[in-house]
Length: 78
Image (cartoon, rainbow, N blue to C red):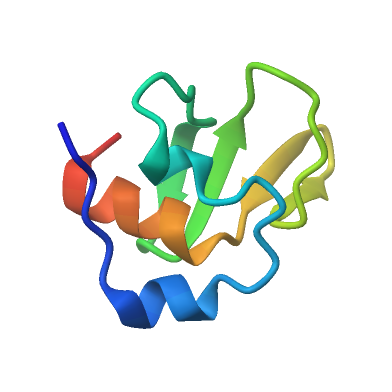
């Protein structure tokens, strides 16, 4: 399934060091959203420990501030 993200959101995702692999590559494994608070704060668990400018440490867990990842979760529940 092709993931479609509005251009406005793509333009706001300026720090993506993964070249939008999440929407360009069907085999890319997304960080799993374990818990979402008010559709604004997305706590994640990642398969790898790759550096991501949008992955922010919060105690023993992480949350994601990536506009594209948030939209994927919102639109596709993935």
